[in-house]
Length: 134
Ligand SMILES: [Zn+2]
Image (cartoon, rainbow, N blue to C red):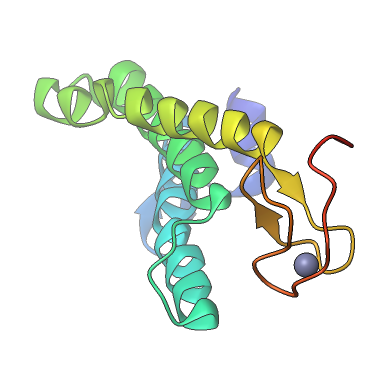
C-alpha cells in the first residue's frame, strides 16, 4: 500500500504531516464523520425543524468504520478503539428502522411526501391516496 501513499502524497509529507496509507484512512474517516454535522444542520435549516436525514446515519457508519480501522490497525490505542467499537450498532439500527418505515409508508404520487401506511390523503398536498394500491 506504500505505492498508494507515494501516489497521493509524493515525498510522504503534506501540510507538515507525515502521511501513510493509514493516515489517509484516518483523515478520510474524519472528513466523512465530520461532514454528517453539516448534512444534518442543512436538513434542519431547510425544514425549519430538527430532522436527522438518512445520509446522516450513512456518514456516521462509514466515518466511524474508517476511524475504527485506523484505531485498530494503526494507532492500536484502547481509548480510541473503544470510542468507535460500538457506535455502528445504533447507526445500523437507525438505517434498518428507516428502511422498514419507508417500505411500510406511502409516497405521495403528486408531491413525493412520505405519509403513514393507512393514510387516505397526503398530509403535505392533500391529494387523495389509495392505501390498497402499494
Ligand atoms: Zn402529496
